[in-house]
Image 1: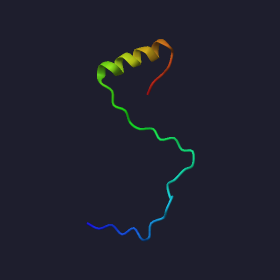
Image 2: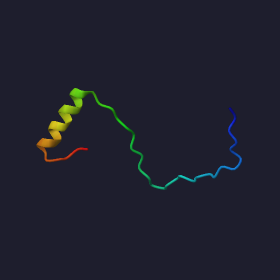
Image 3: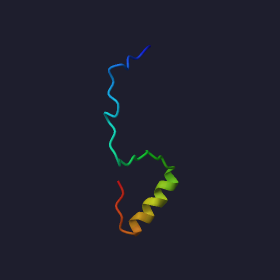
Length: 46
């Protein structure tokens, strides 16, 4: 399957200074540990 890119717009979704957050998947044991540490410090995690 070919893609026609001749009518594309360079930088259409570029945002200068944007911060990219990559998804991180933790094991259940690690997630529970970090949640407990956050709760002890009064930090709510989502």
